[in-house]
Amino acid sequence: MGLNRTSLYYEPVGTSDRDRQLMDLLDKQYTKKPCWGVRNMMRHLRVLGHQVGRDHTRTLLRKMGLDAVFPKRNLSMPATGHQKYPYLLRDVIVDRPNQVWCSDITYIRLDYGFAYLTVVMDWFSRYVLAWRLSNTLDSLFCVAALQEALATYGKPETFNTDQGRQFTSWEFISTLTEHGIDISMDGKGRTFDNIFVERLWRTVKYEDVYLNGYQTIPEAKDGLREFFQFYNRERFHRSLGYRTPWQVYSGEADRQMIPVRKVPESARV
Image 1 (cartoon, rainbow, N blue to C red):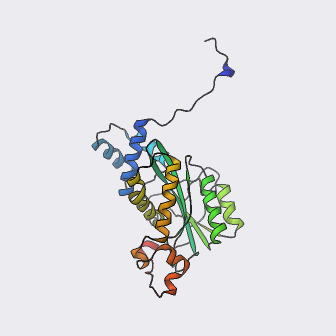
Image 2: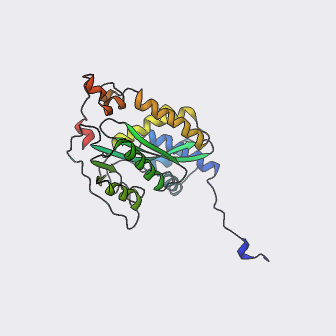
Image 3: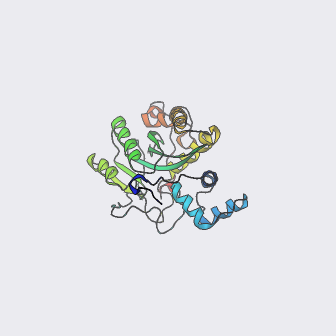
C-alpha cells in the first residue's frame, strides 16, 4: 500500500453506543436479579426489543465483571498462577468491628461510558472504610482502597473477598500478608459468603447511581463521595437496630445502650 509499517499503530476499538446501552440494561437487571445467568439475561434483552445472542450477552457480562450469584462450581476464577485461599468464616459469629473486612467490585454506568467501583467494608457494622472508582478493571484501584482503609482504621483480623483476579493478585495479597491479616475467599457454591457488600451495591445503585445519572467519572466521584458520607453517617439500617454504620463501628450505639441485631444464621452460612 506504499505505507511505512513503523508509522502505523493499532488503535483499540472503544465500546459502541449500542453495547453501552445493553450493559446499562444488564446492570440494572442484575441489581434486581443477581441470580440470573446468561440465558435469562439474553431473554430479558430480547423482551426489551434488542436482538442479541447468548455469546454477546456473556461477553458483555464478563466485561462488566458480573457473575450470577447462585450455587455453582466456581463463583469467581482467579488468574492463572494466582493463589487461592480457603473460606475462614464458616460458623464464625461476627460480633465486633474490625473482626472481618470485605471487598468487592461492581459496574457503574455513566452517560458516556462506564466505570468500576470497589469498596472496603467492615462486615459487622456495614461501615464503608474506603472506596475507589476506576475506568479499568485491574487490581491497582482495589489495592489503593485497601491501603487507605488500613492507614485510616488499623487492620482487621480477617479479610474476605471472592476469588477474582484483582483480589488474588500479588499486589493485593502481599498488602494483606504484610499486615498479618488472615485471608479468606468465598468458597465454591457458597451464595452468601459476601452478601453484605452485595446488598451495599443494590443500595448504591438504587439510591444514588440510577437517580443521578452521572455523565463522567469526576462527576461520579463527587456524587459517590457525598453518598458514602450519607450512607455511613446518616442512613439508618434496620439490621443495625436503626442505627447508622458509623454509630455501630465507632461504638456510639453501645455507649447509648442501643441494641444491635445479631447477624442471622442464614446470612452467615
